[in-house]
Amino acid sequence: MEKKKQEQPAKLKIKKGDLVKVIAGDSKGAQGKILEVILDKGRAIVEGANLVSKHTKPNAAKPNGGIVKQEAAIHISNLMLVDPKTGKPTRVGRKRNDAGKLVRVAKISGEEIK
Image 1 (cartoon, rainbow, N blue to C red):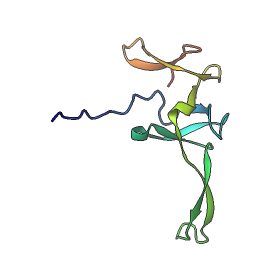
Image 2: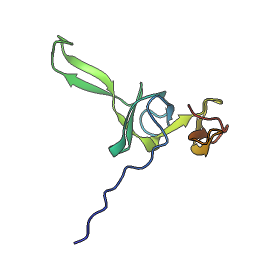
Image 3: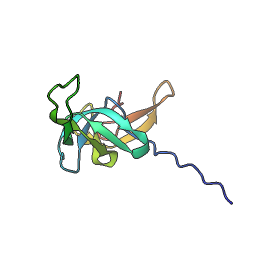
Image 4: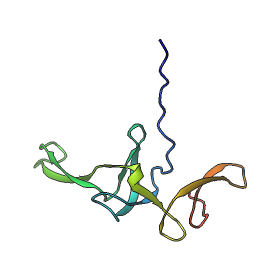
């Protein structure tokens, strides 16, 4: 029998703390920072986007319980990085900087993404 190759998750062009715009889905047009990236599922949680109602039981933190609005994960194909120079959604490329380090760059302005 052949050994199965373990599939690695795809290299993502976005990471925690990036400013992104939602380009598809119910939250289309929403802009926010990435709070968390879920690598193995290829999803990310964006601040203020894709809000869902979660029913919570009473606990020490919330004695009344009730319905809480919170962000749900969005597939990264529905997100686009916002260009730091122009403020428009842009594709992401990779280039070597002066120090020889591989950095992400915005395709629209050529600006390095910090």
